[in-house]
Image 1 (cartoon, helix red, strand yellow):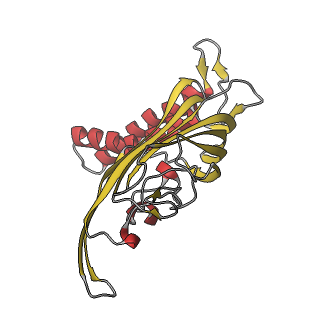
Image 2 (image 1 turned 180 degrees about the horizontal axis):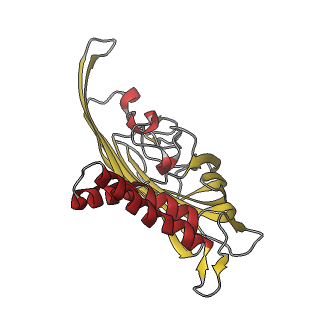
Length: 275
């Protein structure tokens, strides 16, 4: 999955039970995400996920339209851009050490209210561990030609060049000019080459990695006693089976407000997008 962004712009109009008119502008600025598996060796990658977002509301903002910090029901960055979890309006900053929409700010001795603006930054990093106990390649680096040193991985990736030649030849047999056929063949093969390279060089039957997690979230509440930035740190394990990722960990709230939740267990199942 590559970089992506999303944004919402909503005008809200209504009446209170006292028939007082309400006019509210709610804006969530573009939310940017990044995901990358950084190769450090064959079948060994450092996984990085990051997301940053912000939002705000102006005017007479009713309590139900305010923002609250908390966890999300989405799969973090791996959700497709048309998933309901990404296209629905955000409820506030992502802070995984809380439950969904559990984090407000105190404006009195006991009163907790939602914010009118927020920002958040979230990061996941998975670290590879070498050794057969922690990972097994899907395609082993087995040498199949001693003279040239060609491996099974090399043969699989070389099939993309063969496919490109075959597609171009078929197009030319149908009357397509050679230069056009070659260009079209490259375009077609380019769509599947990243998946083939991933399967050959990075995919594992299984791998187990330590997982590090960090969240930073700020919620601005007018009249709040403390608008400090909350932080969440945590760790866990990531089990990958080919393209399926199973993650479990614990996020601890640090730099918290009085009465904040101490921490939260987080789990998810996601699938790597190869294209």
